[in-house]
Length: 605
Image (cartoon, rainbow, N blue to C red; front, side):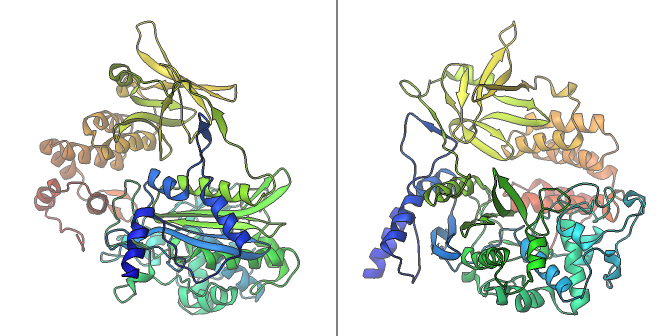
């Protein structure tokens, strides 16, 4: 009976924490302070801060795990919500997450250890160490050789920012297929985009090259060598770069969810790009890495690296934002090292002081990272982090937010362009919302034309032309004016790059507004007639708009053409079908496409 009562309590509170640790009264007070002081960038009408569970509900976050560091120790760790909602499996502090790019930080520690042991030189041509695969230099590198130092700091001039995951029951590429962009890999080949050492450009592709170097030098599987030589010594004994399979214990892993709350197919995706995105870990484990680096930076002995190597790991390279495996922020003299992360259905972030012994690690089993920064800010305030916390703006709305008639809201809806970015005013879940850069925020009107959001510091005001049509909005942050955003009135006259046109089109498609998406895809084909991706986007839009004749005409027109080297048109159709299936689109229309093109459906679908 007692267990049943506990389970009901967990359901009603929305908070789940399983920990054997007994905390002091002072620590419990700090936990409560962090949990109960969650705000965005704006506080309306002196409203009370939210709690972590309330903010999780606001952002549709199923589960969260956090560890807080103070005085070079884990002060406390706690978990909230569900590791798997459908199974009613609670999140615990031992639940493993696969948040993505934080994998690169520990990979860098591994490469720096190889350099420390004189197995590699960080400043020598990478092809000196590559045995199973060689990097194909071309004219874009301008005769300069790429080094491991440049790869770890994202200064190598390489392509492929990041990687989508793969269905655990589908076709998973080898790391060599990933590097050469060969099916079943869905990303282009990792190649030079410009000469190495010229400037910073983030590249998960480059990190994947370092993965191959490590296995070629050590002669061991990447996950095995990294566990024995980096993770285990540093105290990350629950963590692993091993790719889960059907024999893995499913209860160890958090299930992944898309921002709308729908589950990732088969619980989560897997990544052969282990160094770039494949580390499964807990916040407490990652805290052990942070503490080891902090102590070593202060002159104490690291469990893995020498002081010289730790300095390389925590010092900006080539005056850029990145060190070899971390990012460095100087907040008016207070220095922090950090790394964010995002995989399909997961995200995470750590921040840690270089000169003091505090920090935080937070993982979520959703792609929407809005909650991360709300909680980090609460931790920073509670523990008085130096030069980190900024008080939110306070806005008083007399008599509450202004209610705008529906016929006026209709005039505001649409796509807007500003400073090489785009935004949308949309209706979602019965609310009028402002969307940009992956974040959808509720709009609070302070007049019939002016609005604010909790998540953004800017105040915005719609304006019209002489005919009364809405043509844009102004932008101000604390009295400082920024360039106006201009509403797109006719997509047929746009002159945007092909990626922006495609992204706007897909944004509308994802919201089931295919007819509004079609003009953007058509414009992309008109402006970039040789771009096969643009043509395929248009074909997909026709298909979902039930215009099968127009869709199949495009599908049939390019059967043997290459979208990019080693990647055919037919492979593109298959991989896009996988995307639609995993993101819960109605893919029945593809049955006839596969039949008419005589293509086999991908394995696992």
